[in-house]
Image 1 (cartoon, rainbow, N blue to C red):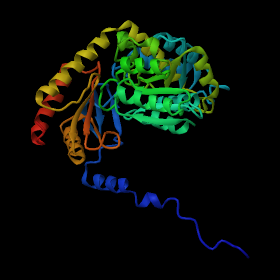
Image 2 (cartoon, rainbow, N blue to C red):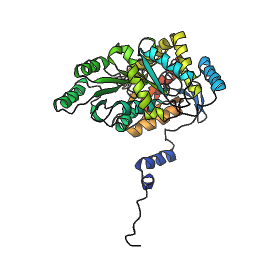
Image 3 (tube, rainbow, N blue to C red):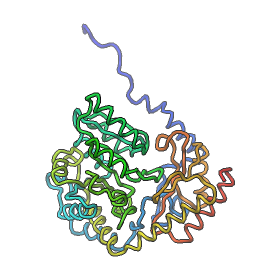
Image 4 (cartoon, rainbow, N blue to C red):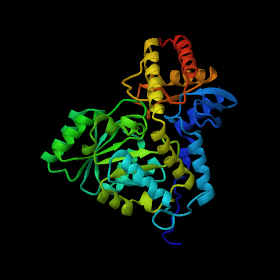
Length: 408
């Protein structure tokens, strides 16, 4: 045939065969130190069974220790009996339950905003909110160490993204002032984590909010690791700093302190209504299951009835922050339930993870790009469910292995 194509398209899957990361995965599996995708056979909160071994769990975001709380578990079971296993549709059409609306009202009240909207996951909350609010000609000002869901949300938007140095207020202001002076600034949105998920440090919200207000930029805080942990009653980093009236949008997840799955965005009524009717990650997604929704409502009940859980969490956190530092480990600027042990070298970090696991401590190895290059770390996190014997064991093992690896 005249003009027929005689060449073939490049094989789309070729990249999968020669991928450098997968080569490293195969090597790690063969040598027995692959640290990811480990199936948990039983989860008891402070302890778990992994690969047939009982371990102290310091790799979980179950900050309030509520995944096995009787009221939370029973509420999830009751919801399944009443509503079934799933909603089989989007919130827009047939997937809105009275449970969803009850939860949205309670969450809005909890974080001190007029309205809230629930999404099926925290990741989808950021994707849906950012891509909906930020349009062509708008600018996002984004901390360089923000969560991947924020970064992906910026990519889905039609706006321009400017990244400022981590927790650097002056660098944020410099970027905005440059855009204003060159006429490149449309609507501006500052986005930052409240608690940074790997380092456990807090965003300097008072100073960021002050500069944002001065420059006319709206503020969104992803408080996935702050809700349930920081501030009065666990209301989050925004409440911790007392900047409720200066933060326009508060995002939170249910997969940490709320012991479930999902996420929410809270703000002014008109803004939430706009997101509700325009966010593709909401309108075209299956709605949260009855069980996951009921579990979050039950967690809010427990937080009100058992405020001592937050006190116990912070007693455990302070003990481990002090204990690890006294042993001589570098723990960065952690001010939250996330306490990193900074190692530096990636291979040493992975091998240390393996030895910790062998000794009965389950933590998380974090390497680039999840951590800055040269700053590989063991991420530990603590919960209200940990007892003194658990913390004693963790410190004992870290003391032993810190000397074995030449870290202390």
